[in-house]
Image 1 (cartoon, each protein chain N blue to C red):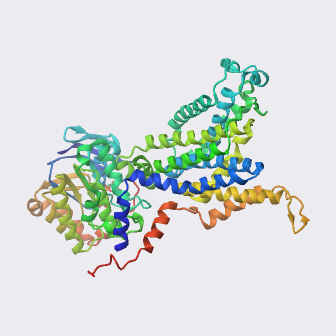
Image 2 (tube, rainbow over the protein chains, first blue to last red):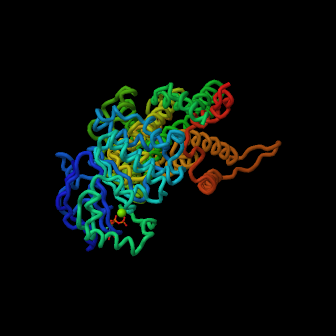
Image 3 (cartoon, helix red, strand yellow):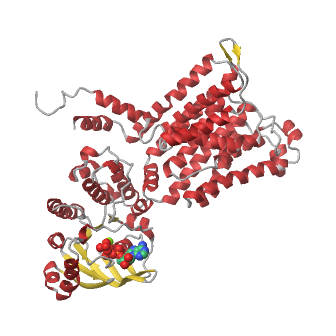
Length: 254
Length: 365
Ligand SMILES: Nc1ncnc2c1ncn2[C@@H]1O[C@H](COP(=O)(O)OP(=O)(O)OP(=O)(O)O)[C@@H](O)[C@H]1O
Ligand SMILES: [Mg+2]
């Protein structure tokens, strides 16, 4: 169970998160939506330990993750993907996945025992390319590899930052199936950021809407769809810039 | 399709560490074979040349373990070679000899003598300890900072050798070290180091460290303990460099601090870059190639006879040639000869591709 309590984070005056609080269930798929710059990636970075929040606390089950760094979060079973792909390009596909599994083996061996790399690669359609350097894969496969690598961590919580970016409708539908399958297999929670509302509505149990660093609404897809504030903020913004989905900001986190 | 499945199933029959061990042995094969040929047939002067090359190989392998896996620069390997060499010089040289050379040595070191094997063990231990201490700083660095700090480390150690004359004899040669090893020992050590480097590279720790070199942020987000692994590689690499220094001292009988300075660092670095620092095969073949080349150039340098005519000596040619090799290598093959795959992995691919396709391809016969 993920609990975010009053988390704030500023970047040189820009208040990216302002007292964000919510609780996620242990096996739910929670969507995180909001216009560009709402603070979605910042929240994911704070949960995965890549960024240290200025205040507030982040807990997974009864473990406090706040400010303990990305290594600690990963060892507790927080897996993630990156908005801008961050694979290990000259390691092979298989080795990329092994990096996650090794961490799981060292820190939660009982979980690692149930992870079979060959089966995992097969499920993500990567088995035939297991020996190739990850950097030579086409973009779509690199995205899938990021997911596979995160699952191989034996994750209790998966943070997916725009997993459907750059995908066509067919691929997005396949991704939705994949996410449900991951949840079924590893009984983990997923926090999914995306700008594709259809995708988010179809795959998520609940959705959290972020705007200007604040939680505007949280609830089932039906409730969110019916919420006038959300329509104003989110859909308004989407209408203003309908192709924003394809504009991926190239920002460095470190 | 058929090729990949076949490759995978065939490779699966060996446990991963066994595959690494076999791979290490394949890579070390030329090291062993060249060594045996020299042992059996070569004149004494060539044995000396070869010994120096094997010591260089140990240093290049030590360098590969840290640099090749972490991709953090290291220009300080000379320090650990020197520490290894001086440790055994001070500990294993007979007391009678030390009364002449370092009578005022501190801690009563002039009055004790250790069996060479014990001295070697102590030398490795001392190096490990110093590496662990310096590593606490160096494992946190990367980029220019690592270049500068590792280089400074060597400068500091070098000036200690030069200034602390009571212990290290300063700029003078330290003589009288028991000459207890021969080429065979160096061949054995280089083979062992090749295998260790390969096992480390392919180990879980090695893979995690290599991941950190590819994307530091992603590696950390996947639980890689970058600091601890860099420290581990730094210590292991230093100890292997020191083993080179120890063998060198026990072979030559006389050492001088100059031997562990710029020239050594540049030569071994050039070997690693030429071969490809990400692979153990790169370290091995870069060393072999450059050692052969430098030796050929040295013989030209000292003046050779061509078709009955004695050519005049061309002094400074080897330095010039090494510079040229580094420049050319970096220009045309910036990542070296063995960029990503090891020798055995390349051979395996070649072999797998040759397999008849018809048997496994699709349709039933
Ligand atoms: N490392 C950083 N340094 C400075 N400012 C940052 C940094 N990361 C994010 N910001 C700022 O914080 C705010 C929130 O950014 P964030 O990336 O979390 O938004 P987002 O909701 O993920 O947007 P998008 O949909 O475009 O990915 C933005 O104003 C952004 O410019
Ligand atoms: Mg974002």
